[in-house]
Length: 331
Image (cartoon, rainbow, N blue to C red; front, side, top):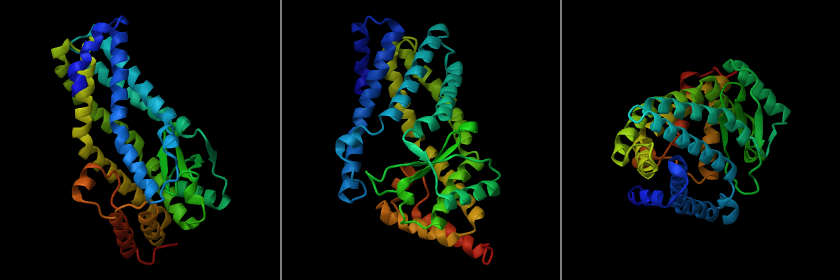
């Protein structure tokens, strides 16, 4: 809020031209956002260290995600550059092509993200787990998807896996803590079937479609609000534009977490339909509560605003409900 009001004053001190000055103001605003989020991340890291979830030092934690953070920073700066150029040519109508630009950049980022996420990873080599993955792919109608392993065991005991990429860049990445012997192959296979379920259900392209749907009215609101500063073609409007983006993101959070939870539930269901092993899923999610020191049934406000996955209780309940409905079906 303070930067949105006072940030325009910096434009008078810059000799970089309108677009160059706007870029500088955008970089400064993004840096302030990062700094404002740092104490919350630091508190979370302190909590993880206290409960032995993480053994990573504070300096290593603070500098650990610079590659991905830098890629996000560059994509946002590129969007700002293009938007300012469009707004100078089309002062009252830039928001429509601007929406296309935002969606194109988000799609491009999702396309190249697997290459960034794969830095420092290695291909999965375990033949038994690979055989399970290939069987899961056939069951879900997928081609062969590269499975990568990221080494995190030197800094955390948490377990995680994620699906990333679209089209030919699709990947699944497992943390090596999932393969350290604590989890039998049947439980690892649940994780693999879940992540492959994201790909077979086209959740990442659907996520981009939701982004496009929300970006259209959002970009229009940015254009309307920043008119009081001369529009997004002027550097003075950039801090206010960043504030509008932050407010819109906050307002959209409940919808975004709801969509994410629905997709995660669908991926859980795909994992059950693929593996026919609800007992393994139940054991896996019960163990997650201990490994990650997570609340299996968080308060409603936390669930609505912050949780992008179903609660662990809900996930266990799904496995039990599937088992009752399909009694005797497991092959």
